[in-house]
View 1 (tube, rainbow, N blue to C red):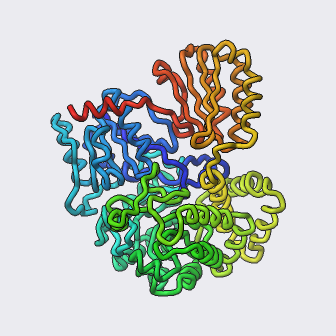
View 2 (view 1 turned 90 degrees about the vertical axis):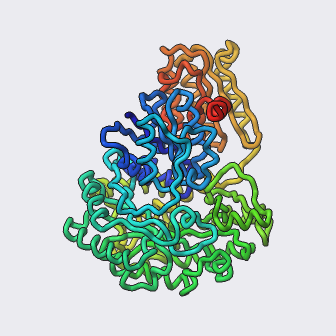
Length: 631
């Protein structure tokens, strides 16, 4: 049996660190690999042929011999997940939908998937495999019981292209004991943390060490949800690290009550945890009580963060704006706290109601839900909730202004200095060799600091810890994070402009440059501003070198100098001319996230479109798929 598992391309978000991955870090394409698919692969029968494709680092195969195509996805991946499911189903493959969003909203997939797998997979996936082998697969497999993580196999890390990611991922526990109103974790995994055995974790580390990994992220939603078991894990990890020369630099997610547990902090340091992500959300006690995040009320959060720093552990943090108690003054409070705490990686998001969470149910009762195109991404300037104490426009404008304020070079430097003042001996280690570290610093300076002129250079120089060289790796990391977030905000959080100044002139110049091709109806150009500026260029028939050079020159400048979106359409082309298309796409790949590509179906398999770079629009077969599902 041949099984193809696909992780759809993610839209850019806070977690992408796209600028760092594309321009600074050597040979990397994404931050984290799809651990869920590697675990699913390990649950399959031993004689199955399994392939994992992560569209975030490699292109999807447009043709495959797979008997089954499984496509996972979070809420933000739903549009691409549905597109892939419909495409492969139309090709005649048996398609299976799974992932976190299918677990929450399994009914959204019945029209495009032959089978939906909802919930934890350890038991139900094996049942599906057995049923499929007998020719009797069911349309729905829904885990309603409790999965013992002792039954979770070692993930098939060998099927992942680990060298393309900044981190490797593994998991110790599922579930969280707290009751945050907005969180879907307790909906999916419950409030009683379940854990793997220490032996399981050690065997996974052995395999990751064999594969050359160094930066490891425990993806647990709260590693310290069960403090006793967490401490047992950390003691074992400390022993493992000592035995293997501190091979790994770890990071994970925890809750803020970590700061009140000195023993846990000491154990994290001993195990070489360089950073933790904490959902701080708000410094307003009323807002924290409103959302049920009472674990953050035990101590002043600034004191808590600085105590964690004192153990050499960096803090990445999440913040939420839009609680019912929040007002326009909330933006200033968030700015002051993030700055004083020195939190460089501050994921500020607008409160979003995920399906089946207590917050979603309350918003539904109060008739305050807004229908939005995006699902589950709270780091864009959008929300699906009607704010209570300010207008939606005020909320969005204040959010954009806060990010703009935080992400100037002087502010990046100010936060870094405030952090280092309380972190004399950071644990953080990059995991790169000395030549790689030097190359990273060089690219940071050349591509990130120097282009900003004195406005970037002076803040950068002010953060060099001349008296504490041990702080340099963290300082470099913080600048990479800060500039990545700066680029993210510039691309994704700026107001969408219906009219881009000067774009008509650029398009007119392009038309003039290819006038002959347009007269021969080989190229057509359409410009629209609804709802944002889009440029549609269609190529028909022969494309020669002159057309390619002109198109590459004008379209690359268009993408570089404006936020316009570009769609390229290729019709009735001779296969012998497809090398010219390759040249054009090569010139545009730096801006591939804003380029969509459409082509006649006879070109599929011949057109070399890297779907991890460009959005290749797959044929929309949804009506056919609905009919087939109904049959």
